[in-house]
Image (cartoon, rainbow, N blue to C red; front, side, top):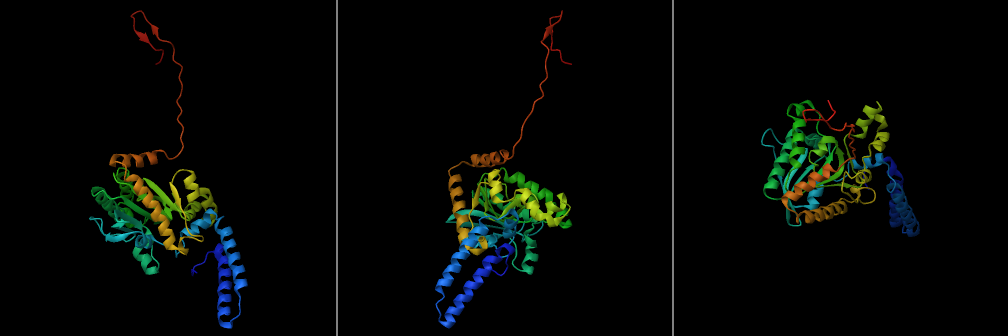
Length: 341
């Protein structure tokens, strides 16, 4: 049972408290409450399916931000072996908001990059709430170039509300650092698999998200702007974030339908924080599936696959203005006139 409870989770939590109370009473009083407990358990499972089977976009955003939700380092510890973290961009310094390192997945060498949030106030200050500075994106690209050199696939975990918008970040070239990552990731000759594990906000997410395959956990979101930011701009009221979340189409289901992502990874009922190991194993299976697929492709085809993926996004139409041309007329000097000025 988690300490932090969302409003729509309260009915389930109340039932869990009743079940726990009956179990404690049965143990102390030696009275058999097994029938009542079984009825409550059945009611609880039915209620969980009803609640979590019909979540709104805003409720999924709330789950994506749940403070007990597993972060990048949690998944690395479960999925990867022999993880060695690398630090610094070789130009300015290290950025703790982005974790970068070398590891292996089922004895296959990979490079791993991901946004990292903190559990406590101190950790969040140290990690800057997973909002990376320019040196973070340059560190990530340094590792990607190293991975390409040694033919290591790249796995990225996306979980940020956005890149850090402060003056210091702008002074050090935030926009240029992200733009350079977009450009350089697009031509990498090793497979890149990105997983949105929580928040996927704006260029901060896309800075490590130009991938051959983009996957999303069931209760994560991926958007050009946060619901609050969108509501503040469009509705002049950040309190209308719920309406903005619906309008933005930011859930995994919406994005899969619009072919922005490639697969939705299942979470345990109630969210990833209910069972981090199960969620990690689901991620691992999806990653291994795609790594196996790309291991059979040439470097050039891997880069082309990524290019064509992003070129195919969106819908557009082309219109050509039709102009009537007069028939060519020969003049006395035997030259041809088209009738156009």
